[in-house]
Length: 187
Picture 1 (cartoon, rainbow, N blue to C red):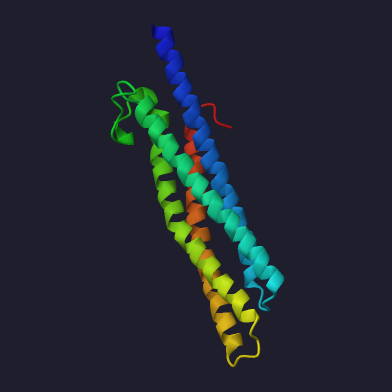
Picture 2 (cartoon, one colour; picture 1 turned 90 degrees about the vertical axis):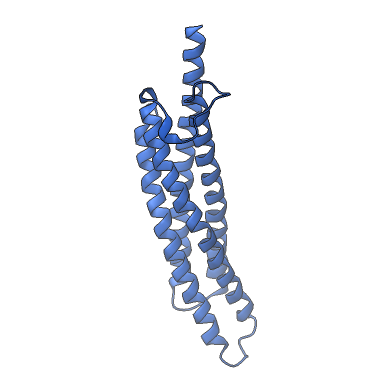
């Protein structure tokens, strides 16, 4: 019986560790995508090809943010169920995990903060995509009075949004990296 219980604990811990590593990997990709998008958009001369590349990078960032948030919630659920008295009596909060699960508790707390960072970044990424979509539409109407000013205003707004999202992603990356370091056996 004790061997089966130990095997069950190791199973949820391994799955938890996998979700922590997934979260970190996704957030690192988000940061890379936002860095690439920023480079495309910060150029002073607006070019359709650069805007499209930036939109592609932002789409990747958006997908990776969603996946990272899902992985972080999955890690939390695994820890709450695995660290509870039984799977049918899970812990309510990550802080309730016992001392035998200190690594998972510490990692879970860091992932919760990383999840908040990702949650804040997601709508900002989407907002930057909207600004760049507007730029693409405006590029089709270069003969309209003051359209250049509108293009530059949307480009600058996109840059500001990307910088804000990148700041959140950087915080989330740091927390996810720290969470991975807390979990024994994580790469």
